[in-house]
Length: 511
Image (cartoon, rainbow, N blue to C red; front, side, top):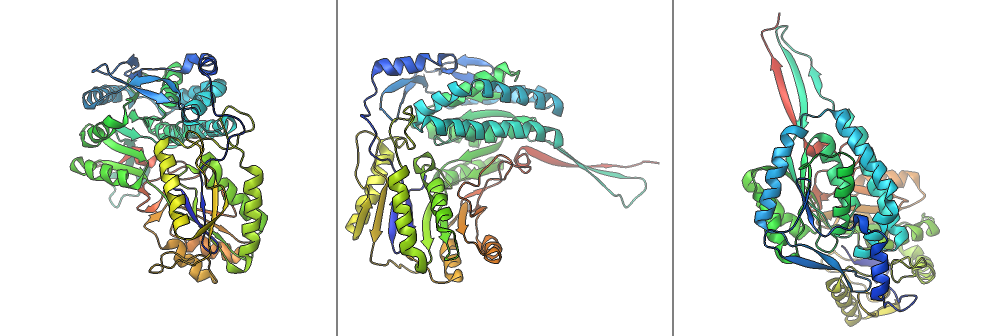
């Protein structure tokens, strides 16, 4: 998650939460009623080899509703030994699963899609309960996540090899693509459904098996997906979910990375953790796919449609309460339109940022995920104040995990070794400021000049570029970053590549 945006003449916007519409008190009776409404998919055990299992130690950890801070339930706190057993089950299942036809895998994925759609309402409620986002936004994530299963159900049947023209009449040269093997996956809490389907969908389509560790804050969405996958006909051992607390996360992650049986690691999360996993995976020279943090620039040129640009900021930054790796972090506005843009953004924030409990139909913003996130936000806001920022909107902590969305203006320009600049005057200056970062996940540019669109899109050093678009992600498109933001790509026609090995076959002695 990235929080801070540099806006215009040094104004900073911190995506957080705002005052709830109503008291955040969420009674135990209401919680019980909510849980009972979709108890069929709310599992409190891990899923290994087609079985619902406890941790070998018998230990569990609690999961809380971030909106109310009430306990939802508890799930197994699994350790390295439990993870090794899951890896072994996945390895045994791979021997059979890799022999299935592409059509067989496609049909199972299609049935999984149908079951997810049939249970979308319950899945969305589980997502809102454990992650906090507004229910309508959870439905949006479900549509996005199910889209990956649907897409890769089709892509499973499009894994093509090659026949290479041979220089010798007695030889035939072929290139085959085969499943890489057992994969280890570590997914984040901010999109607990879609980040799983974006990884597990292509892996299963390719013929691989999966050992997945979901985020400790949001395990229930992963477990619900297992139940539906089993009903869709996915054999035991193909998809395994190992739940663990924050205390055991490093141990479980290291086990996945160090295991010689695991042939590929797929991770979405912070850059710091991604680097650790990459280092741990080096000893077995396994393939590593990383989607690390971003530091997205959002460039608004004087030729831009201001309303479109503000809409882009609202979607990019405030989606999921700003808890998204591709959200706009550094808003850079050409100085000639700065005041106009600032005024328009301020009004839209006041009009549209209505937040509270995710089950309130009026809410458009939920809480932050936990108390640590609130502390981080508050530190950033207080730091801005101490550096002379004027708070235009928000700036206050609220009860629990809520914090007001904050728009602050720093009237003194900051320029430290050319790395931070409040506004820009020229196209070249904006490109330099945008690219001057070690991250390279997503970047945004708003302009009505078509030639400028092409120039900027080509010059930005980011894996994803939104041109007059603040929400570029979709199942049909690739997702991934440059520089320290990651390795590999997810989604689109390239999404299968990380789960496939390429083999060259030379057939000689032919007449």
